[in-house]
Amino acid sequence: MGESPQPRGRGARVAAIVPAAGRGERLGGGTPKALRSLGGRPMLVRSVEALRRSELVTQIVVAAPPTLVEVVAQLLGRDVRVIAGGAERVDSVRRALSAIDEDISVVLVHDAARPLTPPALVDAVAAAVIAGHPAVIPVLAVADTIKEVGPDGRVIRTPPRDGLRAVQTPQGFRRDVLAAAYALRDVPVTDDAGLVEALGVPVTTVPGAHEAFKVTQPADLILAEALLARGATAADGRGEAEVCGTTDARRPG
Image: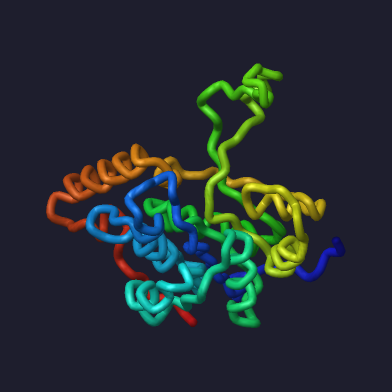
């Protein structure tokens, strides 16, 4: 892929895409995962608030379940553009990419199921793309030993743990890079950076945050509730918004 001008400087506009049209069956409960309650508020609302509090994000686009677009739009407010998502995550991201403003040069893709992501992590990813990196992902060192296992259940090998990283979101990209990646079809990957890697574009890492874990299983929801409760207790009168990251910040655009 040819290199086009890179988005350098504070003037670059940043959009954040949140694909939230999935059912989240592993979490159970019969409610779309993004709308499951966490500390009395939908997870999606909490995830969007982290993006709102970012200093660099200027536009947020959420891909919601097609039958719940109006409901989600009312939950999130007028400053968030809500569109109908697709059948698969890749379809939702493609639709959201076509809905962002024309002058956006940096795009973040963030999981709705990472409701405790610190705004500082959002800014760290965006800033790295603005500084000139075409693709940036937040990562954490892997604590557990990882085994590659074959279809028969037997271990094939044990990759060295030192070089392994767990990947989080938001993942950030130059707009042209992400658009080219999503023009690819039938590439079996599990995240946006995987599509970019298929283009041969280098992907840079920044330190992730333990709070940015993904709520996938019921136990994850229990952990997130506990962390919110601990944060509210630690506030000691300052309020949940200050400690747990639920205040709005003024954003241009």
